[in-house]
Length: 570
Image 1 (cartoon, rainbow, N blue to C red):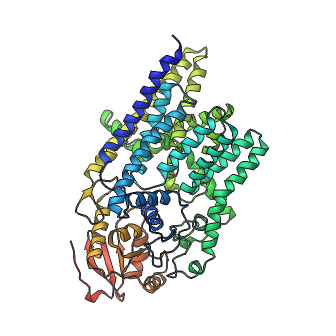
Image 2 (cartoon, rainbow, N blue to C red):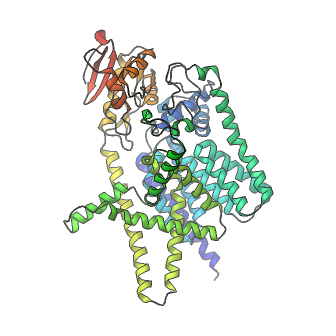
């Protein structure tokens, strides 16, 4: 019997297996609207603005300024669904978007397996796909209206398409261009797809094709830059609705180039980078990339340390494991992935390593090392496949060794690394979903129904109660300063902005009052401390005209000249 008939049922079982895993990862979280915290709120507002015919604008801001940070790929998806389902209500449309992301997650599982099968045997391809699906950020970021899931799916399809046997040249280039262009429109980091597309032609020494791909790449990139230049040259941009609306630290209101030009976008008083500082930033980021790559294949360092320390405490009752020991398996996984990428390059599968290399270079240029796990999320599948390719090569190389000890050592080390990686991933999965069920439920933007989301702790619940109070007591024309302005606007309908990130409290207070801001929420949230670091010093003090009108825990709502405001506690 030939091998082909045997492979067909195995192939079917592989696809059924990864689809089943993808569905299982989504079954506990199919209800409720999609999570609109963080960047998700901006994407949603831009999409609904397009759907309502108001242009590419941030409706939560005074003056509804034109957006220049995010390319419009994901907002166009939001706009399309708003038109199809004839609603811009964040709860109703949010439910449809959650279902869309469920379908996208299953599609990602199928696409990853198809890509893995181009490099690995059926069983190993399925194992690499499962490893990628079980990585924390693969399922965590699919719960939010972020670009990572659609961009990741597009990237996998792009590389898979370029690795296929030769297609008709025109069809090959047309589909490649559409996927690379879509990737850029979904995420600015999609420029790595365009770069990989051009690099693949360069490495194949097809100079005419290089010229064609460069020209085609300029269409999405140049088109977006032309739009941004037109907005920045407009009178509206030059004369914003309030003084600091287009300040470089207002990261949702300015371009990435302006924002990353700061030494630290969350500490703008440190100034702008120069060439030397930029090179230093790149080098410092490059030094942490090995650990970040290992985390992208498995789980974050925090969960590795938690799992290994729990195991050691249970078995040996010993002291906590040092951090450098915990990083050993992460470095080992990164090394396997790097070996795999080199092997793929040696096989002339240029698109695969070119996309990973371009993406890592972009990540190293950013000033947010704490965000690397998110920025590398679209590479999870590529790195998992490369790690399996590297591990398979090491095992095959060791099997030809004359030393039985070396053969056994290689086999045991690879099997041990695989076993502990999967164990840590399962530990992470259990802890994350347990926390999801035990954290406070998120109200559906003020509606009676509530639902679970990831990492929604007491601090978020307190912030939401503060926003709910504002929605009940603030006049319709009130302006709120908060660390989550877009979500606040979706919840209350009140215009909402970031407080000014000014180190001088007097300057910050004058800027707030010139907007004029009516309420400031000083929160307890841990992902950003803008209100505690910059707003609170500006509005507190014996002579300050700002007063606390509502508090819950350590979260407080301040109002200006609030003697006549309703004051309260929950």
